[in-house]
Image (tube, rainbow, N blue to C red):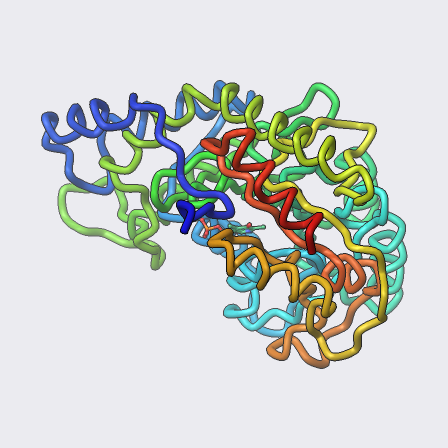
Length: 376
Ligand SMILES: *Cc1c(COP(=O)(O)O)cnc(C)c1O
């Protein structure tokens, strides 16, 4: 059988291991150290957001932002419906009620019209949310200008979940350069990886400094252990930060390759609809996503038979693919939560499949996937 093709496996440039050695040699085998500082500086320079805190995961970064905003029992938090559960998970653990907002057909990101409607309703009912979490889905930025304007009208903080979007652009802005703060992820299959890790970035120095302090148990600057509040153990390890420094230096190469992979798929599968690219920006093409024609509106909460059979067919050939994120409003755990719209994300989930998009894919690898899709 042919070598397995994974969805989006880690890709190492070769610079990472010497940097890990450097971290070992410094003996900062700890959740702090010179590599963490170096990674933060390089990251901040790359995304052009002045303040950055390196953390254990993207989820931890979101949790710290919900802490910062004082999200607590009974609060409402608005969130993109089409996303990975982490976008809302930490707020849910704090006792917040999620309200989900469907995506815009043309971008697959939060529909600003629905946000406007939902905030107007919430304002009338005197229960404005503590935060709006907008997700840069599959590496495509949300419509930052519109979302920011709407959130400002109601004085509700906007958080950008750019976990999948490092390297994408919104006009001249980098993905994540919007709202009060943004989070990024360096999990194993993201655009760059540190095996696991995350970053919190903001133009507001205070937000990042408080998050950094809380990520290290909120210790006060005294020789003994003094605490004015209870923190977390969320800091990034100095060892994995070395991987991040090595990866980040190759981000442009990675972006170029991701785009090339998508163009190979587009050329080979002209009969398919692909995830659209919004006119206001440049997607990082983290994953190539295709849509099969909508055959059956599906009320079961499963991908369509075509999607599932195609996925199995690819799996039989040792190729990994994955359905589009299952919308949050269809998740059993969020049964009964409010959702504005929902039919767009449902349809994208029912008919969508994420194709292998790893940086080390060759054109023949992609041709192999394409030929299976054709045969099938
Ligand atoms: C991966 C991901 C996260 C979580 O990041 P981790 O580093 O895995 O905790 C959050 N939101 C989205 C949209 C993601 O894809």
